[in-house]
Amino acid sequence: MRILVVGATGLLGSEIVKLLAAEHDIVTASRKGSDLHVDLSDKRSIESMYTQTGTLDAIVCAAGSAKFAPLATLADEDFSFSLANKLMGQVNLVRCGAAHISQGGCFTLTSGVLAQQPMEGSAAVSIVNAGVEAFARSAALELRGKARVNVVSPGWVAETLESMGRDPSQGVPAAIVAQAYKRSLGGSASGEVIDAS
Ligand SMILES: NC(=O)c1ccc[n+]([C@@H]2O[C@H](COP(=O)([O-])OP(=O)(O)OC[C@H]3O[C@@H](n4cnc5c(N)ncnc54)[C@H](OP(=O)(O)O)[C@@H]3O)[C@@H](O)[C@H]2O)c1
Image (cartoon, rainbow, N blue to C red; front, side, top):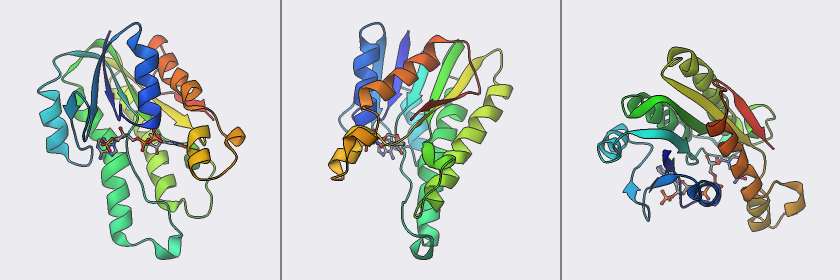
């Protein structure tokens, strides 16, 4: 399969690329340092990227930011940034990508455990993650017969906890989380949220 991985240089993305590259033709994308450059928060940038990809059999997104901060300190701009980046970025990756994915292809997006298990400071992140999951379920219905749409929901990733000075044993190693993306590609499921926590 020819697979586009957006966020390929990141913690999860690099493990996804490592896992899939043995069996598939991988095209990497991120803002810098990948085969293709894209800014998820800019729909024109996504459209421009797709003009360079050719037809793809799968599109994986392991990118997207949202602001984590106490509700009282979140500014309008923080919500706008979060919605435009991790939510609409992934929505537009599917909207624009539908014309570039092969028959029976698969989109795999990324949400996160804060969609279902919020914590203090997660208001913007939780909205975005829940929105990605709701969108994927809905888009899966509309693209039925054309392409599948799934979401991987990671919990805390061990390496991220370690970089924050926290106990990595409370998280899941990135290489294990990457296997959830491979499961999305391989099965027949669509509209699924794959729990990788
Ligand atoms: N790590 C965790 O514990 C954890 C837990 C739950 C959910 N998640 C979610 O998993 C996803 C990946 O997390 P990660 O820890 O692997 O992140 P990461 O290490 O920071 O990597 C992010 C990747 O996305 C790219 N990127 C960032 N902003 C972009 C943009 N606007 N347009 C295009 N590419 C962009 C980055 O490269 P450039 O900077 O060059 O663009 C990089 O390749 C995120 O959506 C995150 O919310 C992570």
